[in-house]
Length: 204
Image (cartoon, rainbow, N blue to C red; front, side):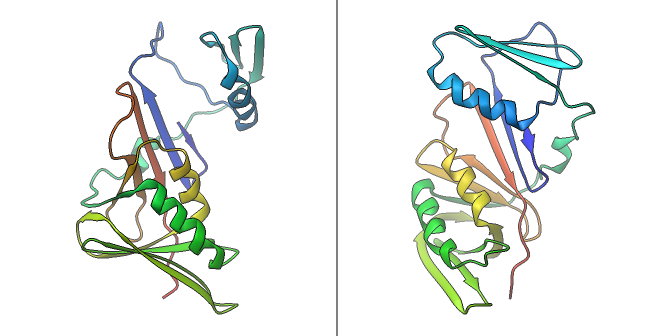
């Protein structure tokens, strides 16, 4: 589980077991370091932690860091349960479309607009200060009411880049409520991943 108040990722595996339930809050920097060095790991990673420290061990590497004091926020409370509007679209095509139009987005908000109606998705961005704009149209599968919603393009691109599968489902309830991204199909049955991103106010 990770969050920065604008986006949230919940990741769980059904094939990992622990002796007892527990939780801890790990700083971002050591996790990024761990991510880089585990790509070549040949053995399982052993994780041990106390109230103040966490210890990772694999191969001939040992990594220890201090934990963050405090209680993790109740993240389940911010994940919308009712999301009747569901957009299914090719993940790579959407990612590339957002990359292209975001060049013309406002450099402060990085806002891109998704306009969904029927089987058409319009991806657009504009920078009113410099009179720049771009729009692209894609085919999609959509169930729900026609909708326009804005997101930070950087957040969307990060999420789409880190999801597997050829298609992604974006679940929404309203333009001012968080959007949820999940893979359309599981590539790993033991894996469960959900990504949440907060919207940004549209410039109408």
